[in-house]
Amino acid sequence: MVSASRTPPALYALAVGAFGIGTTEFLPMGLLPQIATDLQVSIAVAGLLISGYAFGVFVGAPLITLGTRRWSRKTVLLALMATFTLGNLLSALASDYTMLMAARIVTSLAHGTFFGVGSVVATSLVERDRQAYAIATMFNGLALATLLGVPAGAWLGLHFGWHAPFWAVSAIGVAAIAALMWLAPDIREDAKPVALATELRAIAGAPVLLGLATTVFGFAGVFVIYTYIAPMLTQVTGFADSAVSPILLTFGVGMLIGNPLGGRLADRRLIPALLGTLAALAVVLGGFALVLDNRVLMVLFTALLGAAMFATVAPLQLWVMQKAAAAPSLASSLNIGAFNLANALGAWLGSETIARGFGLSALPWVAALVTVIGIALALFTVRSERRRTVRSSLACPQV
Image (cartoon, rainbow, N blue to C red):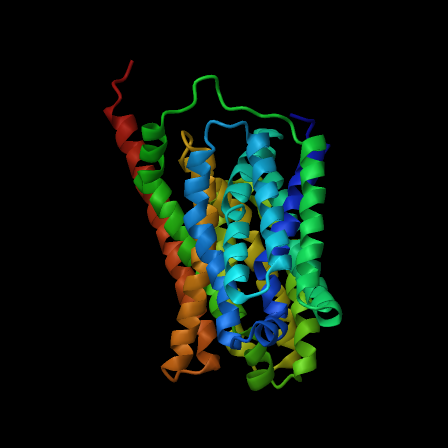
């Protein structure tokens, strides 16, 4: 543990791994035409490479976390980055769609547990009042991946073929392994690891499950809009297709601003930060409905969406971890899976809204409503815990 004025170097090693993982998660988004043409599949089928990855994260996170629960956390992180690197090497070598999908699923197995265990390691490196900041520092790598990694991958794919970005991300994986080996402390669990049954009971408790549900619904609203941000900008607001990429850069800039802000707020007062960031996100999502016809405000709100979205990440992650004190790594990994489930849920809700004839203009209202459900779940959890605390204090005999 270091002084409050200094950031532990190991946090930067975690951020390098987060940058690589964040880049590879959405890498196919910028490569779909090349992949579809080369592998002779439709764009829709090529898009399933992203869905397959998300499914792998959701399923793999708890299984990998449980399977490695007796390992030192440094060993877990190194093994995960080795798996990540192998998956990207297989993607770079893929010659058909089946092999590429299998490689993507292999890669996805590193995602949830890396961020889950990484969050626990990050919080262990700093004082208690800087834990959310530590989580946010690691997640800065994910924000940079959105801002720089994915666009750079699209550029490489355009000029050197779709295999090239996967070679590049494999190199990032090697760099992350080196950084973790050099900088990450060899943090081990207690001499007597918590029993599996105890861990499972910890995550099966109502507070943890409600926390995970808060993540799913609170975050899903983002992807109701973000999945369809390009057609909203071009078909509703009237931007040219060429303007979409520069506008999305403001989303990444917003993420870099919102991420540390959410971490610092959560370190001061976790519950107000959690409720406040979710409320700000709901306001931004609903606000899109009022600015769809204004180009300047649409650019501004795209940046605000990135900031509000990522401001919620550290509070949500720390909240779930604190509710599962007996199983922080497992709860943390499950919450990463919950974020990915939120991505899928949001995209599906957006698709259903459009398919049922409500159009792109209705997406902001649906997005805001979903996030409000997440806020309601958080409020219910907070009030339930307060009532339990009051009952416990009344039941204790006075001495």
